[in-house]
Length: 358
Image 1: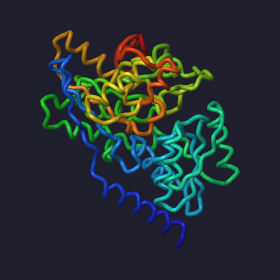
Image 2: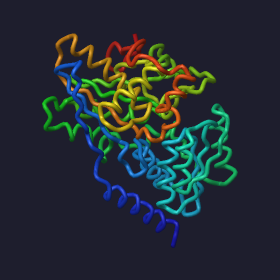
Image 3: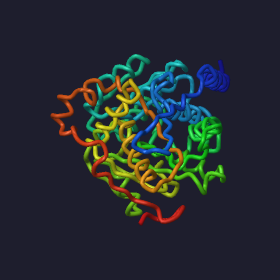
Image 4: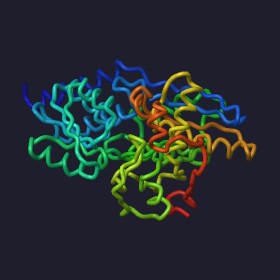
């Protein structure tokens, strides 16, 4: 098989995989504490690889294939705390390609096991070294470094192609408030917030109604970067909410399409994950807790103003991946993560679309 024929077959396999999967559910949730506010949870945990990152991995593989970076013998390398690596391992196995994830030390063992389940290998390094180690490994093996943190916002077709934003608006079409007041997401690469923020503008009819709120955990620089209008912030701390928050401002983070940011204390994220798990009757992960803490904050603001409308957020992944952390009371207590669900949330706004934060 020629290289071009192999790429054509790889693209066919990815498209066939997408067609075998129905879109993810939009789950309604009643908030008794916020009457008049309808909440919807886009359940990304139902993807074949178990998380929101399935969409990103698919886009990154399509981007690499169509740019000529991925061929029939290419080793795929990624820097990832877990979920993106799991999803990329899934697609690498689909195409018969070797995959190596460079992950921070102490990444949840369940995530490492899932990477291995899909045939991937893991290289654990100190958290600040994941970028450089992944680049070096890709060079050494003459492979392709997927670089989710740079390519996330450019690999996804934000105008459509059943991206997450288009899917949300399509699923809301027959609801009482089809144009949501808020869409609430976290930022890891920044790709999801970039896609949704751009699509809100592309839709035009949503511009006067829908705003994008991005929630950021402790030990992440995105909130301060947004509030201060800077892209050069960095620190050496590792966050405790896997999948979102970063120690540096990633190239895919686009503050100009974000209307408001909320900084959520880690204790609030874990408390909100437990709260939402109880409301749903099934477990959700800590990054979903961060999302839900933001939703509760915004919903209570809307209710206090007597405002009616809808809020949409994401179930990023299932809580089973965090049985020995988020759902272990001893672990939470030892890490000082037992606390109130919505206390201490900070907020920063953009004065107007495309302007700097106040």
